Image 1: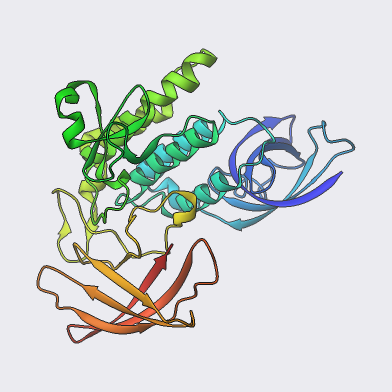
Image 2 (image 1 turned 180 degrees about the horizontal axis):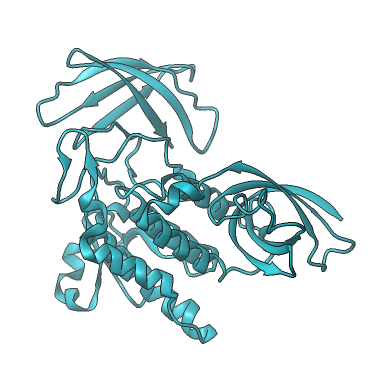
Length: 351
């Protein structure tokens, strides 16, 4: 048997004098192991570090065998992660969580989410919140997904600020107020339909408390497991004040506060449940706060206009944007706007 795939390295353990058993999270074959001959050589050791992306060919006589991997690096991230304590804690947490998934069981959505996370793992502004989103996606893949789209009591979608620890459903402020001591807080970045500009450490810790409760109830305890040490260390690290409240802003410099603007980067795919900006058509740019945008595609689907409103002394501006409505999931475009006399290029994505 033989197949080709791409994957992200979760870990490798020594096998004999020169070989290693490599563990990957692959796009089409799930969490999969294989033997790499010469994996402890100077050439391959830097490639087989956790967090790196690789292209692999797997060969075996029958499907049940461990098989052999032929590996080629496609993205080397390990050296960058070593300089970031947050990235190291986050990577340890993700690998521990992914080992809860059945081996050789495909989860393409989780793989795509993991790929996005790897690109932002050393970014303290968004990495902790993305890990919370990833944990929610894992719970859904395991069959224990939370319903945060509407109130469990009234069915409404406004002011969802609590989560029921029994049902895993959101609860509105009015319906949950009499029982607030028995409900979990719903972090603002997990609420449906809200535009989030910054995320503070308190919101992130509330998110980890939320996912941790359901992991313990549905995953750890039935298997006789405890919370992974890596996850506990990550939460302790964030609680010490090393999370999103201490990010670097180009306007404000380094400092502490209620949060900092998100940096500009590639669009975070809504289709895999990792969008931190769950508005109808959000965009963002480094250095600005409380931003909103409206996209009005043309009838032909080939173009449209973007209206962007900024607060904090930045005036509104208009510009042209090419958008495609052909794809049902996520489309992205590079938009050029003239805002307050300043030409800007923006990444825009829409659902």
